[in-house]
Length: 295
Image (cartoon, rainbow, N blue to C red; front, side, top):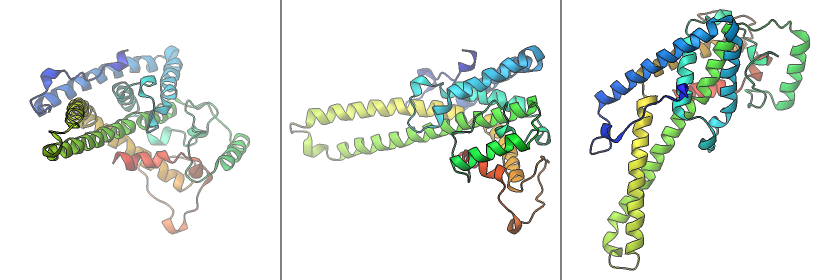
């Protein structure tokens, strides 16, 4: 429940046009940032304590696993966590991973037997399912696996929290914008042709439909404005951009087939001489697609 604390926009925040005053929006965002700071302190205490670190990481991993269907376009929202919950979780992980240096994470963590994430069912950048399974079998034999460190767990959980947090939230926001635009188009069409049907047997049906659509537009507009408070938060987006910049570096290391991370990244192989590594081929396509979608 404490992760579910979100922006509850009551009617008193709205003006006559169903909009929120910019100053009130900033105030709500600052309060939300304060809540997330408290949540970070709470989780930091859990992961700092060696007796609670493992169970806390498993709890976060389970939250992501149970909400894996949030990435689906027509997912059943009633069975999944709401955007506020997932954005709070993502913000907490952003704070936890901000001091994680790229050079200390295991680049092979997504394929690690003890990984807290699962990419088996994700579409890969180059490999088909059979090719991926074959390479995983080869990795198990060829590679000496060390127990993953907290830094690796934390960084990759943060990556997956973006995939299930900010990206679906933005997608739902655009979905609401399209719905508002479509409903407004239908209302405008009825208004423009009112003189033709107002004295016919269609008048009652058309007026009821128009009233229903207008009411729906009002509800969707309030939902849209609530979403804007959350996803247009400057602090949240600054943290997303900073984290995604490290994801870009991580992908570039795999593009060159490096076994160890260095930060900042400088290319050592000319682009014309690059050969596709198996590890790069095994990465989920959304590792790259999410960055493009977010931007």
